[in-house]
Length: 174
Image (tube, rainbow, N blue to C red; front, side, top):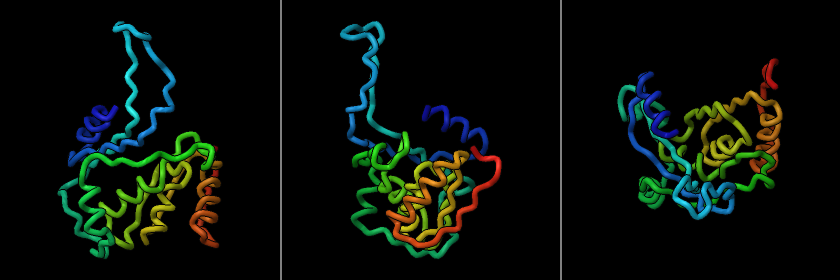
């Protein structure tokens, strides 16, 4: 899937920069064994997610506040292409495929400046917007499913401890 997405992105004008592997360190979700104890069709499970870093035009951010809030320790650790930290609980968040706030937080601090606007076109449970709140970025989240917009709003109010949101739900959403 990663190779296909990279190929399509390049075909529409993006350039490839690098790949980050998130090792969520969770093999407990093993659901298929393939050909049990046989070489006929073993099923390989990799408890990792792939983040493909792409860009347009040139690999240099020149806009924004130019104020970076990443520490030296974070920079050194996060520019290593393998990130090791646990995933997020489906039960706790109430979403079938949540990711921890740590994941977008690292991407946001590594690739944007304080005050930048971050777009999450697949809002889901709102982890990216929580990361924006924690890192002093503006966040815009979009989802086709109204219940996920409401879930994200609830998380921002409770976990983000904010008391007002600008939430527009467009008619026609599910």
